[in-house]
Length: 260
Image 1 (cartoon, rainbow, N blue to C red):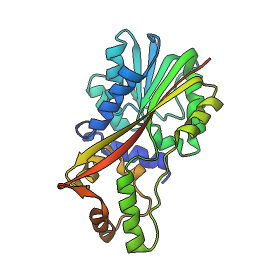
Image 2 (cartoon, one colour):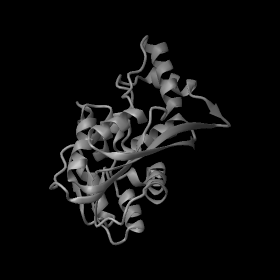
Image 3 (cartoon, helix red, strand yellow):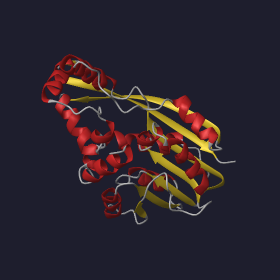
Image 4 (cartoon, rainbow, N blue to C red):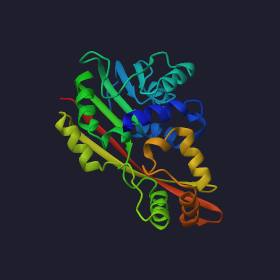
């Protein structure tokens, strides 16, 4: 199954559990909208990869007069967003946006693009967004950088090498320079970026896995070689812990660009 299909399937399964596990996603949405975005008051805005609606809610708080449409690839996620009060939530693919050219004054996305940027869809994503933006419109978004979950990646890779004789095959994440290049190729200008490092504590590796399953991040983001019981146990042993807790690092990139 291609990455897009795995993303859709995984997030569909996690729609009911997403909100209670997505503390990091809430914090990043708030930072993106309230502290990073520099945008004129938009008349029409689109939230891509809306999940259950955190980013749309933050945008509505900052720009209460804006008309905000929300989109997610997984129908159950869009349905949960509607149940939470978002009237204009629909299920659609971010690389095939179902809107007329020049529909929106602004496009926002929080922690969704990482599933697309490392594939051939990355270039088409920004061209499509540019198409639905008005001239002078703004795109701003957050995404995960390669340092994300470095502790887990190193522990799992070491466990794979010890137990299977080969390293883990991870889905790659995209660095800031490459993202900026794709945005520029799609015609965006005045590009600015910010990097944020966030560390969160968990009761153990199983608690971290449970959180990742709860937000639907396991299928698209886990190592592609199927995890075996011995590999998982060795991962628990290799993962650094202190005082009964483990730490997980998230590298967040924030971007903004304008359509001339």
